[in-house]
Image (cartoon, rainbow, N blue to C red; front, side, top):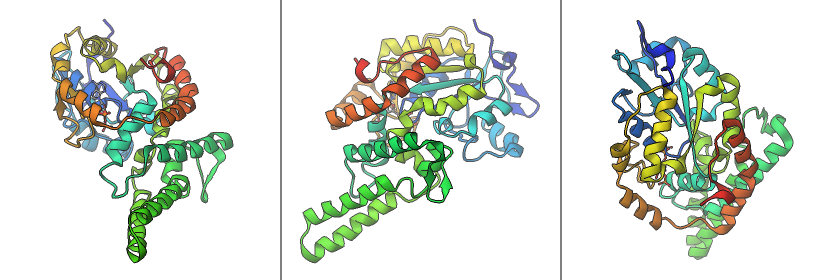
Length: 354
Ligand SMILES: Nc1ncnc2c1ncn2[C@@H]1O[C@H](COP(=O)(O)OS(=O)(=O)O)[C@@H](OP(=O)(O)O)[C@H]1O
């Protein structure tokens, strides 16, 4: 068995540190990974699944008060705690902070077929929250154009008067960088309103529709996360920062598809537990309860949906068009390959999808 992080002693006078961090990726099954793991008798949960300290709330001087206070005050020998903040993977500053404060922590990354991740994110963040939902294909097309330009022009590309250093954060966060998708969105919103209404009513509806599209593209704290349908699926472009800052043997890639089946999930959870250094445990009963945070229901990360109900929710969701799927598959394929070779672990995505 692999030794536990911190030589099995996560607690110091200032509190207990997490022995594992699930750093992402959002909409790939981070909630299920966290709650399945929490079923292990030696895993004691944090106060909540997502603490998001190392990105939005980071302040080195508040490490104890703001961060360690979220974990159990004491742990018995062999017990560990941990957290899951899916935003962590997206920020280039986070891995250095984690390496500094939690040297030795085990890092778990769960990633999913990029087209499926994008579609899940679209339903979670856009559908239902916008009065004029923009078609998935349209957002994907606009974003891939933006991404192609970013990778072609390199990291010195300007976002308005700012230089983009970090694709995930600065670029999507800057108003001008998202204007590609924003402009398409506003035009579409106006056209749709005009199709549905006539005369003056069309003008009023078009204005309202455009306002919705503008509101959807306004910069806000984490807007770049939900704006990235495809970008968040270029996993290796963010994980490179993590591999540079932390020892390779402390990083584990989990394919979301390996948790998407009762039998497979129980055995994959065994691999996760032994990576952390936990004793063998039968995750069968934990996994059998169902899937967490499934089907964009917004019932909370800890809400579990039976496997049968999750399957029927998935069936009800309109399928991804062949065009959008191929567009995402083609664009993400080289990034996927780089991820598999860096992580030494393959997932069956894109053309390898089963
Ligand atoms: N066991 C298992 N295997 C594979 N996939 C699973 C599993 N459990 C949950 N899910 C699906 O993951 C999606 C939710 O992901 P997250 O919990 O990471 O979302 S969040 O970013 O924290 O909001 C959400 O995807 P969609 O249902 O497609 O939206 C969940 O259904």
